Length: 336
Image (cartoon, rainbow, N blue to C red; front, top):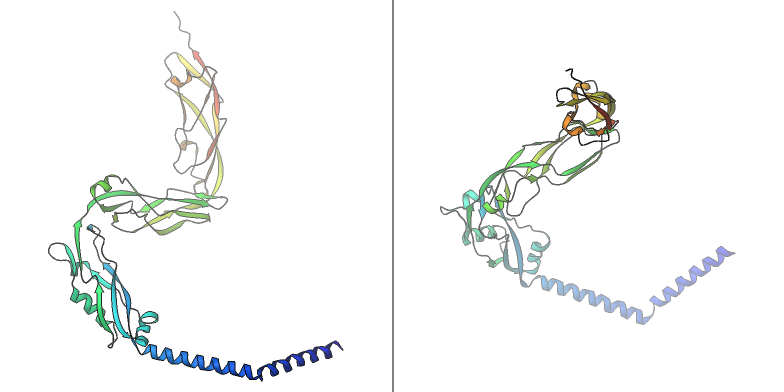
C-alpha cells in the first residue's frame, strides 16, 4: 500500500508540471527568453566585429648583467602597449596569445659610456613581430630605454650557515658543518660593504634525519648587494651516537717548590656522547683536566670545580663525575 501511494503522488506531480508547461503564459515566457538570448548572441557577434583599443603589458628582462655593475636608477620592468583591432582579434591577446618579454642583453645594449640603450625602433620592431597582421600599434610607453650604469666596489666575505639541525633520537652531528666555497665576492657601494662582515645562507630547518646531508642552498639577499654567486653547497655530517665513559687524571700545575697538592679523587669520570665510528679511537689521551695552583688560593673550602681543558672538537655533550674535587696543600718541612 505505501508504494502504491508513492507512485500516485509522483504521477500527480508530473501531471501538474505538464499542465503548467502547457499554459499560454509559460509559452510566452519561453518565447521571450529565446528571443532575448538570440538578441544577445547577435549583439556579441556584432561587438566582436567592431574595433577597440586595449592595453597590453610586455615584461622587460635584463640578461647577463655582471655582478660588479650597478644601475644608477631603477630600470623599467615593463612596456605598456596600446593596440587597436576588432574585438574577436583582441580577445586572443587577453586569453590566448602570449607576448614574449623584451630581453636586454648587457653586452649588446651597452654603449661606450656604459649606458644601456634600447631604441624606440628596437622596441617597436619587437612588438610588431608579435602582433597579428590586422592589429594596429598606436603607442607604447616608455618609448625607449636608457639606463646609466656604474662599477660597484668589491669585497670578499665569509659565508655562515644559518639554520637548525635536529637529528633523530640516537643520532647527532658528527663533525663540522662545511660550506663550499667558504668565502664569496660581494659587490655594492663602499658604505654598504663596510657594514657587512659575513653573508648568511637562507634559513634551513632539518628535523628527524638519520644520515648526512649534502645540498645546494641560496644565500640570504641583502638590498643593494650583488653576490658573485647565488648558491653555495653545504654538507652536514649526521651519524648514530653512543655513550663512552673514561677516567681522566686531575693534574695540578704551577706548584711552588717545597709544596705539594693532594687531590681527591685523583681521577674523574668523563661521560660523553660520541659518533659510533669514533668509539674505538677515543681514549684518555684525548682529554686533559688541569688545575692551576694559583686558583686553589681562591677556594678556602678545600674543594674546586673542574672542567675539561682539552677535548676533541666533535664532542659536544659531556659530563664530569664528580664535577668538583677536594684538595690539600702541604708544605714540605726543610731541615736546618
